[in-house]
Length: 381
Image (tube, rainbow, N blue to C red):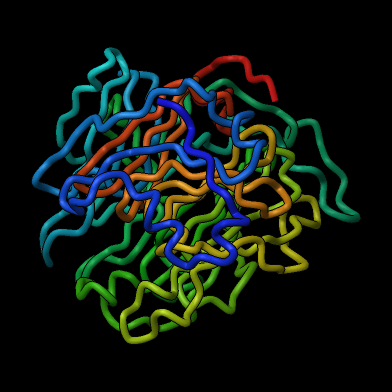
């Protein structure tokens, strides 16, 4: 599959230019294409990369998360919400063969799972840098080699609080990590990342559970939080969102990206945000500063976010995956012609989740920020 070159000069004076690029004319059978908006896109995706649809199911099995489990060499993907009172299932996609067989399961302790990531418990992560005027002792720098597990945002329902839950799919054991903000019920936890140096969990709290009818009315604003699993400290680190959604660290950990999917709400769209904001990560990886607009999605809204080792930002949007460089310039798209919710890097590949369909692009030059640790392979930036 060759890259389709997009002429931004032609598009600048022709509002119908992009419609002419759409592969095929039947919206019920979307097709995948690779669109280059900038010459640097070839440094991200090989010009001879292959792209294809892996699964096309009747249920919306490929929605969020996409957490790698080395125990069975599989990706764990959360399904979309179905109906009130029904637990959200997990789709397990095996990486052992090129046809990527999958099956549906449930993980213990999870009701309405959404975003997730690899989780290394406090003893596993490197010790955080000392706080100001605090002397570090030998015991605080000790680490172990405990096996990483998974952490999910459980959105909760009318009977269960929204929470962060650690799950080991190999032993079928789960542990609630955080069930409230100092006694107050979270609205509907959405996505989570672990800071690889401090071990803290950073997560977003939206109100999609209320929006979809399986959570009570929110009791606090929609915000971004930081949680210290070792101490129980939980702090609000950013607010001012319509719907905070995906979040991701830059590879040097100096920047946090957060998407706002406010335009999805029909009563407020289309003038609400479809925007990725960037923040400086300061105070030894504990606070945020200098909020600014990083990028705006031209189609749909930016949902799940991931960075590659070169600092490019990948976002699942309304027509596939958009890739921006660290300056916010759109490099290109993995265009699937329908809303994509998230993506997952594996070595040399990227999977795209669009609810009923699962896509894969093979021949990726870029390496996901977390691939080195998750897959135990060397990365070259």
